[in-house]
Amino acid sequence: MERDVYISIRGLHQYMDQDGYDHDVEVVSAGKYYKKNGQHIVSYKEQFAHEDKPVRAMVKVDQDGLLVSRSGEMASQMHFQPMRRNLTVYRTPFGVMEMGVTTNTLKMDLDEHNWQIKVNYALDINNQYTGSHEVEINVRDSKSRTGFGLEN
Image (cartoon, rainbow, N blue to C red):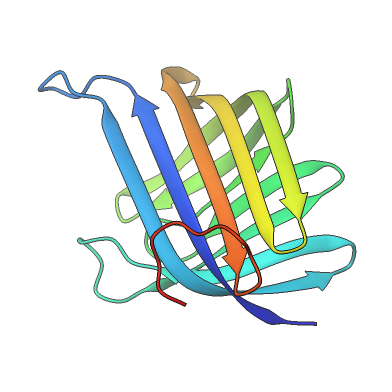
């Protein structure tokens, strides 16, 4: 069964850029929820300022953990499993990089109409540590008793 949802993904990326600042990013989008092969999936579109058009993104939850994937020019597939390091590739217009994702903590509260997921992880690119990151994912449908600033 497919149903309409809203998804909010907020990340705090704790590394210093050349100006000495941490970075906070948030994406809020309408999407679709469905279940397939034992996985709970939310599919949505997102767009960043440097992109011409929105790209497809997905959040998948199953008994093994959390998978967040994104297509397009900046494609990635990040698999989060507690206390594990997973390798993936990060595709950019400038080339492909190997990315290591080490999940420190993964907390998932998955109610039928309301998901709250928090993940804390370290990231390395080409075996070079790039920083620690925290991501909070919230998914709500029209029957959720809580919201996060969107009109239904």
